[in-house]
Structures are given as structure tokens and as C-alpha cells.
Image (cartoon, rainbow, N blue to C red; front, side, top):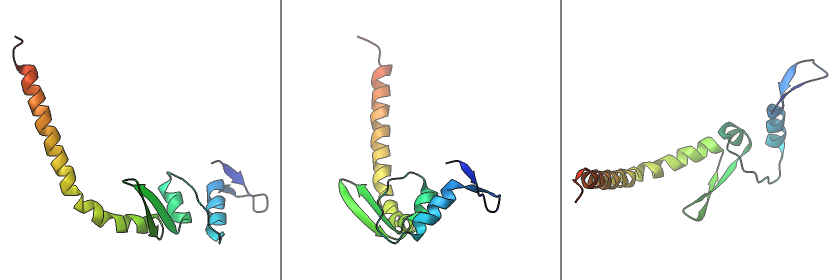
Length: 103
């Protein structure tokens, strides 16, 4: 978004700040999709995600969502390490096949 000059004070303001403030004061339901984490954290008080074909709901802003989500993702770290090991083994097998003389 662009910067806008406030006609009363003559100060330049960021239009995103104005939008964030207006939406932050909005007391109704607002559904939006955004990749700007700072914007989400300043506006949203509930987070809805789609993970593994399921809708997950979290109360709180984006920072709260990350805090609640991290323990679950740490448990998934073992699964990721297993997948990395499987891929490394497949890659080693492929390299072995490619290094064999052609017959």
C-alpha cells in the first residue's frame, strides 16, 4: 500500500496502518486471506487453517497460533527426519546405479 498524507496534520501516514486500525476496531466477523503475518497478527483474533484436508480453528492472533502450533510441529520433527533419511537412502541408491558401468 502507498503512503497517504493526512490533510489535517500534514503528516505522511501509511495506509496499511489506517486499514489495520479500522479493522482492529471492527466488531463483526471478517473473513480474509492474507500472507502478511504482521497484518494477520494485528487484525485477527481467531485463525482458521486448512491442514491435512481438515479445518483447524485457533483462538487468538497469529502469534498465539504459532505458539500453540509449535509443540505439535516439534512432535512432527521425527517424521520429517525419517522422511529425510528415506530420501537420502533413495538418492544413494540412485547414485550407485548411475555410477555402474553400462552393459
